[in-house]
Length: 475
Ligand code: AMP
Ligand code: ZN
Figure (cartoon, protein in one colour):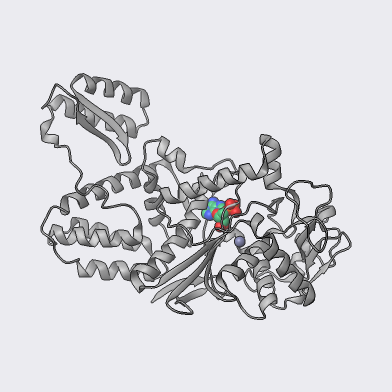
């Protein structure tokens, strides 16, 4: 039985599809006015791990929906109030580009980065800008049922007090929110009746781009309504698991929950699963902090993109993790070693999987995605001389369906034989590996030239340097 920590109950809860062995998942997606950093990707890996666990260990099918926020995400949406300028339009002005061009660019980059981390694609990636009708329909329904109202400023607001269990997810209480309410939130919120109400539809005001016609005049949707409209439309009025990073628990998910449940009259999300943040230099990775690392940065340093994924797996999703280049280097080395061991074991006679490792590995994943323990079980199998290589191969190949690390990638690839090298060349290769470790790129380049002189070509790739003979000096 798969168990995950539910933010709502604050306990481990059994996870199972509510119907037809189909696990339905909704993952809050990227805001596409900038690159997704590896922190964002950590949260997307969480959704992927849940889906893989369901598929591989429990034989479920999965249906995942992930929204693309290409409109309606205001620059200042961290607090209770939504105010400020739309992030897309801000980026468009700064870069002097069309906002939709920017959105499509970063959406494509997000899809590429996910695939570089072996995050299986979602079944649907609805774009906010293409779901305006769904949102308008939902807002109209909320007005009809007195959960929302048109404010004095022409914007539409959700009436927080109309939803009695508001705050149950995040632990906030309506009366406590007053202290944090911004008095200076400006014209966008001038028309609301209660401090904790939030905008579902914002009157366009002077905004000209990214505005749509609606029964309440030209305007644009609030951010929270997007996830309600899309999840209800694509997954129905009840779905199994909703994932995101902890920062979205409040106000985003509290508000989404109020909207969705008010619309259908019952709980929509069965389990809320929030991943903890990735930090860098001890602080939450965020563009505003200036500590972002992109998949491109990792690859530019010569590491395999999947070293990032392996690094994530060394921690549990409910714990913060601090990213360091040393930790990534370590993950990259382990990845390279496991791939070459798997390639070696693949050549041995086939044997059934090692049952004890499979059992430990399975129990670890089912236990609230205890990936560190799963990795320990594999590490012990690697070193266990009592287990036939063929069994190790089968076990690692199976485990990789959950881990998603391309561990069988090097099976069948020609391998270089170090015995084939002169002592000098071997010493130079070792020195170069050490230079790269010490980030002494100048030294590493000099050693590459010296090796070339000995007829050994070195390339840096995922998993470190590899070498081959250049023509003429060796048959
Ligand atoms: P955004 O593009 O900012 O809307 O974020 C997309 C997803 O990344 C959301 O689920 C966030 O909760 C999550 N996220 C943002 N920053 C981090 C971080 N430093 N570590 C982990 N997840 C994050
Ligand atoms: Zn969302």
